[in-house]
Image (cartoon, rainbow over all chains, first blue to last red; front, side, top):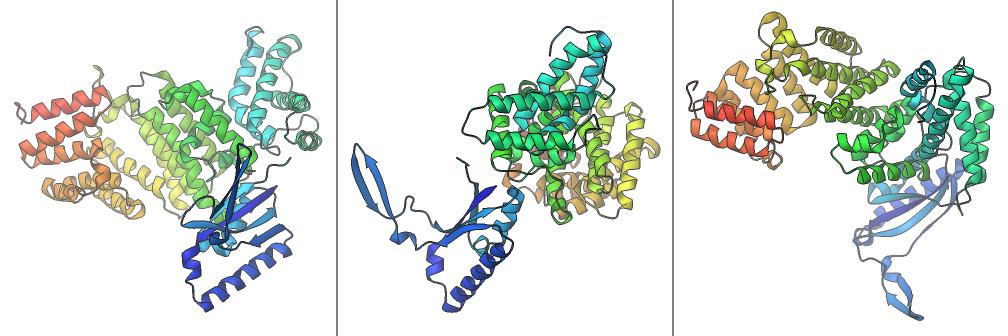
Length: 115
Length: 418
């Protein structure tokens, strides 16, 4: 089954992190995605720019409305994702627990709806 | 289920239904994880058995017969399904299983795996016990709803949602690895205990459904203990439930009035259940890993000492509650500990221990706290404070018999017994 691991974290804390901390985190993500590649579970994954770069679009009555900012103004924002293919939820949960983001924020695990 | 059919065939079908229901659900849903479809197919298979067995005789292996028929029914159902879901993939899984289970070989017992799926951390804790009752024992939603005092429609909807979650989120039917077993087993045992406790909360046993739930809880506890004989907490939970159940008959007098543990007649306790509980606890302690259920069962065991010694072993009870308190931090345990202290060191010491809990907001609406406090105040002669505490306890108690008991205690404060 495919699962999307959505990495939510506190952006303010991320932006105020020191250089050494950021390097350490990037190295941890590097090792993590390498581990997922080695075991053959990864199907995709990217880091997102902060929510200050987000733009939301909505079409109502045929009119397109474009707004500056993310869909929801919450302290914890989506910062990246991984798409993985594993046998079951327990396997997905153990990959989520290994994600460096799980130690700072929270990982939402959602099964992909096959169409 | 249909009404027609010869009596012996019908009885066999019912026995198999009871003994094998969870086994068959676990077997049918193991790969597809589709519990609802397995239940539907199984109920078709039971109906088929009632039509077929009286005419052609009960098959040599009724379980395997039901499994094979249910399997065929679920293939038919999957073929008919034209939704966006992966019907082809579903059929492939079923075919794989059919090949794997060819012939009338014994149906494997995956009930434990099914219980772990039902008590998975991804399932809402409140629905775990109902889900286990439904999938392992085949209880319908209305029966479960009435036992858990929930509207049938709401219970039914929550059960459906939980089963969808198992299937759609891909919750595995598997006994977890050693490293994760502890925490996950706690959830399974907690669900079994919740089922038992729902039945236990009807002490008079007036509502058959709820009394049965206590029995079913014990049945599930026996199942878990037999499937996990090396897990001391599984044994401890069964011991705890048996100790509690052994006292059922003594909890009410002939007038239907509540009798507190301290005033129960030990001769009315079920000696066989107590002995079974003691043997289980002994086996558990030999495995060398203490836990909450073993400690709670040991407390019951120290109460039972009264059968021989005329008095409970309060020193042991205090020590056990100390250990439980350190382990759980539960205010409920702390109340019981205070009651034990009153027995070992006098009512003032007990009262001091319970006063220390007064700041805990969780206890403000907790009847046993006020009842225990009232009893200790009464023992120290603080009549007015005891009256106020009894008043709180009476106002919080849902059981009419216990309420009458508390009211009598309150009257006794100024009555001839005081």
